[in-house]
Amino acid sequence: MPIKILLSSTLRKYVPGYDPVKGMSFSVDGEITVEELCERINIPSDRIKIVMVNGKSKSMNHVLKGGERVGLFPPIGGG
Image (spheres, rainbow, N blue to C red):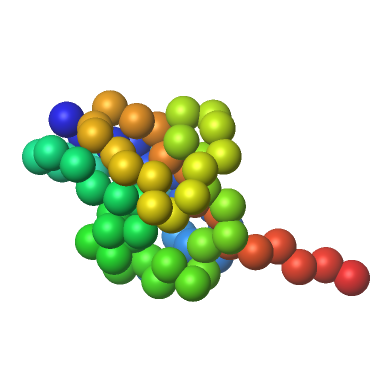
């Protein structure tokens, strides 16, 4: 079952052809952690500060089974 992935700002550069309006889908058979998902789509896990799964904050160790909506966000600086 596919996972819908939405990438914020600087994370988009790691996925060639990423469409910020539509996001992207990633099909899984069985279970996968958020960290494993990031590895498979070539996003360094140290670049991710916030993980949202179906609108709720989760860790990189959260297990996905398919059908989820995953938002990934980098650290945000300011000053």
